[in-house]
Image 1 (cartoon, rainbow, N blue to C red):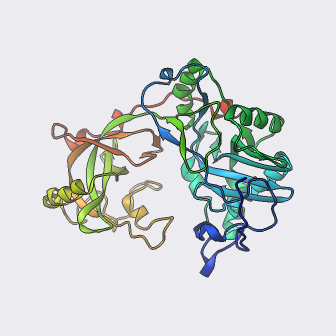
Image 2 (image 1 turned 135 degrees about the horizontal axis):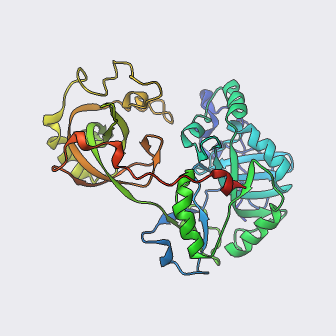
Image 3 (image 1 turned 180 degrees about the vertical axis):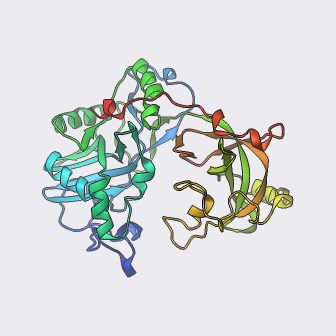
Length: 393
């Protein structure tokens, strides 16, 4: 049994000194009202990235599922008591009241289910992760309004407990079978993720589902037990390259003698340099070398394309100034050092979210043969559109 006697009166409100509940210490999260065979908090089972095509994994060797792009969540229901735990074992129940109500309607009376909170935009046929992020708001009135105007959905893909039984020690094939039986008649906004053991079907999903905003595939061994906080599943993600302009950097947290992250830009057809993401994972030796190497390019904001003293020319365009302070840590300064946009770097990325890289880009190599002006959005591969409704049907 995975269990805990942890309780917290603030699980649906605020933590110490008015801090929103998700920022509380994991030891102060959940209330005592539940009595389930698997008790919160539970760290979800994780996946490690693997390279190569889907066909490299044999038919029947794995269960393949779409990799959803949202908030990983474990849902605990014991009668009227519902808790939504995050990947970091912190409660998110207060941010998604519409889902808590749906779980009371649609889920079994007593269960623990692993899945993903997503926000579908059925108008575009894609998932909308940026709007989903806005759902984490400290004001109760705002939470209520967002629940009505941008309601979230939940996609279930694993079963940890049902009734009085702990399923975490059962093989995934058995857990999946029980999950299908338990959720056979669920209605939106609760969904059961599709699954296949056919690599040809999985390969088709890998190509097609990206057009609906999904994030690749997850492969699970049929005989695998549920192992919290361990990377025992496999994830197969798209990997692409792009040539970007380096237009600034943020100092490393250890001091000003090292680079923390490089800020990347791509040119629009209008000639505006759009902020598209960052490179963050670099060896410390490289961080210090870059700090010296980029010093001649340091400039002022007077003529910089991301001058934060100048209003953005286009409403809704995200710039480094809009991220001057972290949404997740109000005390973290994310201001940056501007560079003349003269250097070009090739980066690896998986996919875009709007006009930005969905995840931190990876350094590939410098491109002295490319001019900054040649780094435009036109180089990016566009996934073929695919309707999200077909996946969630």
